[in-house]
Length: 194
Image (cartoon, rainbow, N blue to C red; front, side, top):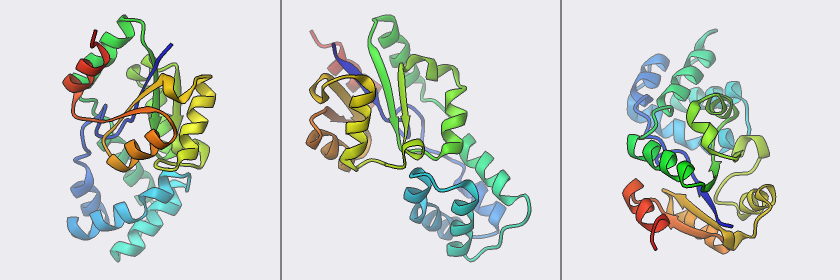
């Protein structure tokens, strides 16, 4: 039986709008902040701590962290990625009602993973794999092997959606039926096609 596997960021949720506020919290320009934010994101997604991540971001952006900065930046960052896209939420509801087996595979730091696990939408997923928990992130093909092991499924029995082409290519190399995310309506057509 087929598993349907979703990425989270910019697939199920909307793109974060928190970066300007986080930049202001550090007292740096949005441009300088965004460059630093993404420069260290892979390490964060692979399991470095909140403190390690924000210290690296601040250093790259030329800012200093005060005593409450790490907690406030982490909370703001998690909130920024917490807005589920309405069409994606409806798709999850419909797939669950149809009896689909759903899994989540997300490059995400541990702080976001712990938040996500407590959200009502997380209940749609029988299996959830967050990169920080396994110290491995897309596009490494190893994470797809780990996913299919947890699912007890053959790669070809997994339909995977991600918004990044590099991750789709890697998933295909691992044997998954992978599709570039083009919105919930497109995914619906693929999944509910006769």
